[in-house]
Length: 279
View 1 (cartoon, rainbow, N blue to C red):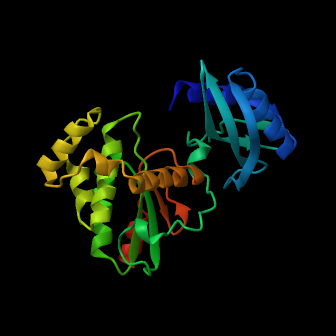
View 2: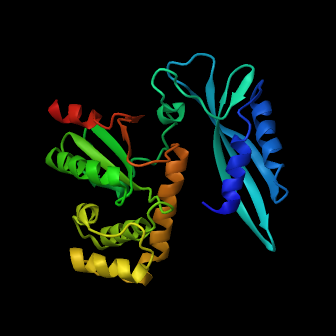
């Protein structure tokens, strides 16, 4: 995330509470915070979606989208900014924490699934007509993903009639830059029709902080036998796929990995798929 975008985030979450009354108050709240930065020009702000919060009365989660122009020095660029606000009849809050569990309520929000979420191009394993469907957002260098995903893949591969797994990239490049190259390698391999590269990259020994693209590709070739060129990584088809996955993650309020949805609902336990297989 750029410095300017981080500043915008701080502006949005800088006030913990405000008086609320409806959509208009929420939009005005966001605009007021954004205007505190003189480098921000607001093109539009709107409430994109309202989400109920399971188990909490009187509060809703508002997904707010903003179309902005950011000016920094002589440079001006367009940015689509998105945030979540929690709204009651009288209050707007930027965070809600469950006192009993300590869980951030953001983690249990259930957005509306995009119409194209079960797109064939994202079907990694299992049959499309399987009775149970999983959606996975993952990063091959996320340590939690590396512990979780291989077992999940093995389970789905062994039960293709019961479960279908749809895989979406969410490289956390700010934490481990090398992941951005690896997810592109996965897509290059997929377009070539090569199988098994996902498992190989989740097991590859590589420094997550490595930024040298050619060095990363050399390691991939050495460890997996797959040879990919920098030109292939940045092909327009690959760029489009990676952007699509990032935008899908935003629409589904996914910010961390691994995040999994089981039969259309976010599975915070990440274990629901095991019950599908046992049936």
